[in-house]
Image (cartoon, rainbow, N blue to C red; front, side, top):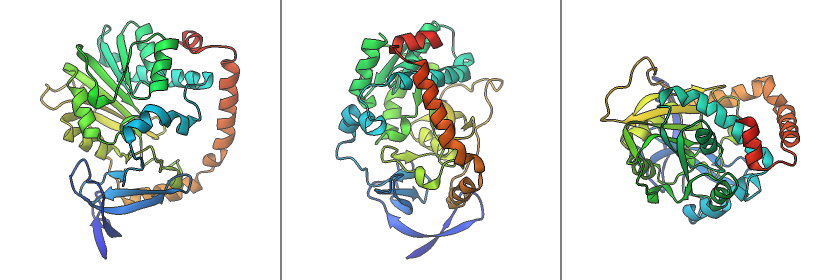
Length: 330
């Protein structure tokens, strides 16, 4: 059966084969969808679909027998080939942590209490504490959480987000490149939101599915259960009870940066934030990115740049432990 799907961009209509998903879209609750891709970045079977009602792209069905157990024990090994971070991973994460702090430091009090949801090996929590903030993490992956506790001496709770408990309330909750991995994102976001102080902010960073400098075939990863545009990220946060303050691409547009607050909170100062971006996701945009990727010559130079970066990271982290690396950078 062929149908015409009215894309969110406006008047453009795209013919597509309608399918019924195994699991409903967490935004619309509908199973009506269309196929986007049938293989992951390695050529293995992985079905990514787009909800007709919301435009959200997600993996269907979930590729893991037990998602919680996979992220608790196996994810880092499957993704980076190690159970604990190598020195070069710590160095790289530290540099990224500095960039993230620079984007948000003016939005929170100097003594803000912060929770990093999905704190990984702990570099961002370590950085916040080194700058005088009161920060802690919650991490589902046991080896990485134990590393951050033992090596970096930072407070980290080992727990799925839906089971996280704390007596504290936080001025800021961050979630960097984690939301796309969650099987039940609305449930997890709503639960974590209970721990925000009145006026507190929830800041999220995720990959931008509309990024044109990533090969179309490379966009689909079995661990990325959801793929977001700025529009669908804002829609998902609204479903979880949050209002968008700002949500737009950052840097080279490879990632999205979203700042959210509870919908019943007072409006934040317009001097600090711009209006939410209006970025639409549809077949036209995805296909355009697929074509543009091959037309941009610098994409063919990425291998050289990546190789140089790896050599640099290895050289700068020789014979150093994680804490020594972070203290040198921070």
